[in-house]
Image (cartoon, rainbow, N blue to C red; front, top):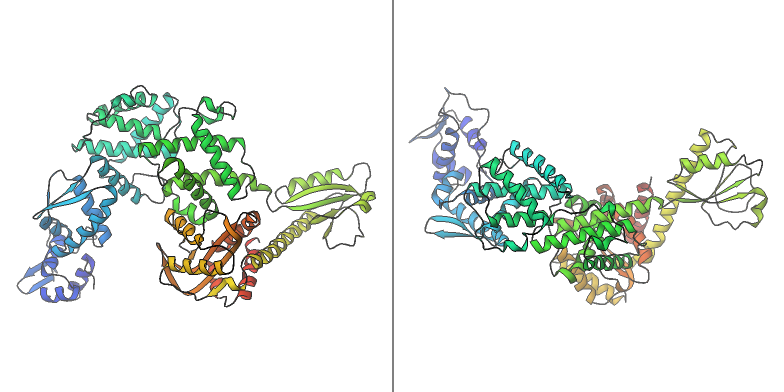
Length: 639
């Protein structure tokens, strides 16, 4: 049984007599000292003594009511890790491990094990715990300690913008609101453009800076203030410095002012992109960034068979890339609270962003983190959503009897109501029907037609009524479903094939499984063995496994002989990064058919996003069953 305040109280309440310390120690598998510490903690919650102690052991004091709430003690390692790290960060003196063990109500050996694990997690911040006999303290550069503090705050606000509701250790809510109002006022005064993410990043930096200065933890570093002294960002930083010193009764030295300037520079623009065009962009942004962005966009278009991006996207994306370079230079990244949602909900768009991040490696020599990758996905996704408004529209011919243009109101009404679903490509008089080549999904007409064709014909009234609209809508829905179903069946058969479908196909690790699948695809002349290295390089950038139990390993290259999908469905899951995976979809692409392959990828992702679809696919026992089930789900997905 795991010990906790509630668990200990339950044992004692169920026993009306004394409970021996040895029994409690054995029951909870802890030392008698730990039992004593928990008893002291519960009793310290009030001036009353709730648990009596004697040589007989412990029992509840029946004359005193138990409190409604007992102050929560860190019980899991994660809770203790957070507590210990915060104590090390907030303490300007050394800490006794015996006192720390007593505070946490754990044994010395448990604390020693905790400290070993914490030391490992601190290495990513270039920090260490120094132990001298029974005294510990945190060792490392002040800037790295602040990065650690930032990570703690970000972890507490993982699913949303930083609300600062969980950082009472560093600032109260009145101070937070004051900072927001002042920053917005200052940035407006200096015509500095800062989005919500950038503003939160700046506020977070200021909050941590104020707290550390108050605790005499100042950045002790020789800096060259001349590097930033003549910039607009430095003028703004000085303005902020004056306000902070007056409000919080602190003194901000040059070293702190320098890094405040860098954080502002990395999270803001000195121009409004609405005034920028492709003709004058070089007046605002250095030409190097413009050329890099153009190269990135060109490669993105080629790799994913995308139509050319427009001028507005080029401008916005160039500004973003320029600011990203600044953040990399200053080692100051913007946090994106929606990383997991973007990655799991829009995996294709996220994959495009990973491709861009990988291309940026040639210029930055720095791996772009997932927060920044998600911001790139923001730009790509919002653009694709706009240009895809016409996607999957049903093509239509409108055939009419030419009589005083009476057909025009009907056409106008139909095109207006179905502008998102119907593309009227031809409007033809009944007398010209014999010369018509029928290449369309649907014919809408105000007359009876005798056409020998499989194309569905929707006859409507010359004065379109509600029944006509309902009939057209139902026909469009049916056509879309059928179109998708037929296309998916054809594409699935082309890119998968019976030899690439496996049930209960296991390996010791994800990498070994990928290796085995690649080797088989190589034997089928679909790729060569170097494809394995490309897939593993992609995995290093960001795991391709998702919480819904699916992994989609793939490469960012299009070097294969033929595009393919290798499918594995397992009854037992395999650990893949942080997720348990039962379905693996190895994707290989070639340059020749990447446009067609993109369509099937879109449909596949839409299906794999729904957990209910995943569970249905788990039940497929063979290739034919899989193709049939997948096709049916596409029809349902489009309904």
